[in-house]
Amino acid sequence: MNKADFLVELEDILQREEPCKEGDNLNDYEEWDSLSKMSVMAYYDKNFGVKVSLKDLQTVTTVEDLISLTGGKISD
Image (cartoon, rainbow, N blue to C red; front, side):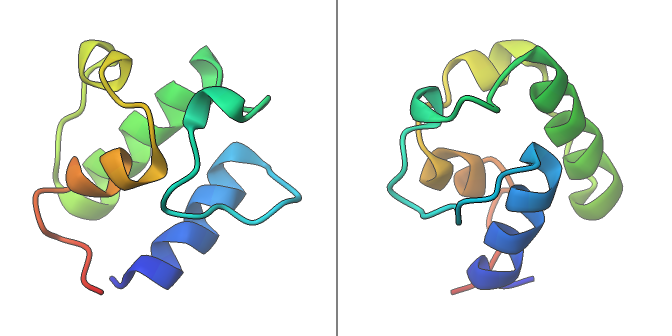
């Protein structure tokens, strides 16, 4: 998966009407709540085979941090 595709998927997961950008601070997203974090965890498990915990997501502040959590499974 490339970054552009991931950003579109993230918009869908978060149910955002505005586009997601790599440098965006997730705390600025109204949609970044506990339910969306659970959705991200399920998405990572299903699509990347990566287990992400709530503790992992507490350290994430930007969309770029989310991309890094895939362990290199998202290409430029």
